[in-house]
Length: 88
Picture 1 (cartoon, rainbow, N blue to C red):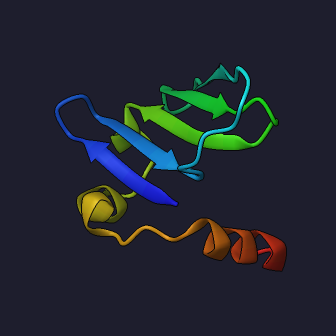
Picture 2: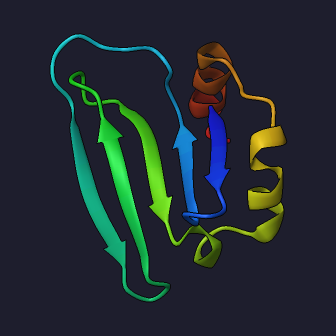
């Protein structure tokens, strides 16, 4: 998992999976009208969530996360799977 942030666009992207899956995936849009945030969820052909783009990210994510986004060390797919299985 990796988080990137483009301050000029006020857009964050959370990558859950780096690898590609065969077949065609899709992107699903959702909106949060309370904080005026647009979410775009990238879903692989096997139905796994690959990543989430957050527009107007500064309205939804803490400044500390946005400031550190490109400095955070990514976790591997194996580490992500362990976290998911543990319920963390």
